[in-house]
Length: 408
Picture 1 (tube, rainbow, N blue to C red):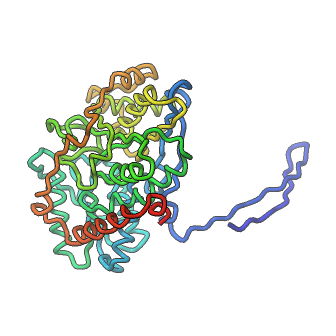
Picture 2: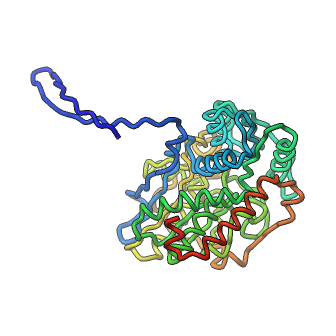
Picture 3: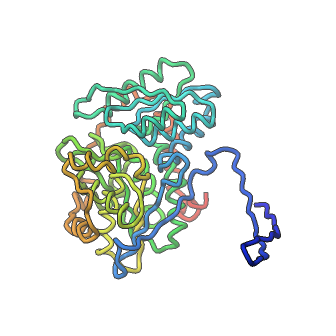
């Protein structure tokens, strides 16, 4: 980066000071070049010195405000290289929030039309951000057979993509490039930041991109790292009984294709009440804003901090900031209406963490895969082609020694 040295004189009321400063000038061609390289943040109050160190991977620093910027950009730029997305084309996606916001931002920066299919659970803040970036938003009100909106949103998005000329469906739910983005980028970033001290990694799961890609990376290059997936009670990604839940950003009614459960060591399910209360507590007691799904992950991190070597680090993914949940998580009236605590203290949160038990210590036995959805939802040919190409690439990587594969 270019450096410029300047000499200045600052005049106060009765004394003059001479000082020299250096100004580093860094100019990015577009906002998209600022995606990634997010910080790790330690805790001052919730985490004790005799425990493993909990570090938050704080994805709010991405320009779109969440970790979804990473996969969205990777999918779009791969589609551009492959010729699946042409200049002036249309991006069509099913998303309840962050991924749609990321695509809307990318579309604005690159000149694409963007259509996002959301549902009634999408927050007013998320809707406003998508529209602010210029996206067209369609609210899908028809529930699917599980009582959710995922399948009906996806089916409509796929139909629109087949009808609109020059349209591309990133398809975060079925496109394995979602997890490849995190395998190639996010996981390596964490690996380098932790300098061999990492004992466990924790993140929430919905489409499976983050957990799928990061778990595959660590099971290849650092298999001693414990990998933990966090879901909501009521979701059936890890099996169990399906029920309605309030925590956004987690859950499906099936195990996503991006997730290989054999790469996970533990699966946790956290209640809405605990997830929301924990997110509020971290804002109050650590000054860290996060959404409810990250609150669930933070609770699991505090649990594991008591169980593993104090010399090790636990990286907990904080996927976005709490400012997207002003009308729910940070609205006292709304919280009280749900029966959720707004004033939980440090001791209460630590006790909640202590009482947590894993849903499964063998997640591979909890698979709820529904391969038939690929046909019934008319998954796009570009997704199927990308998955086939990626499968071949991964097989070639597995034939190499781990170090040489990593260097590639």
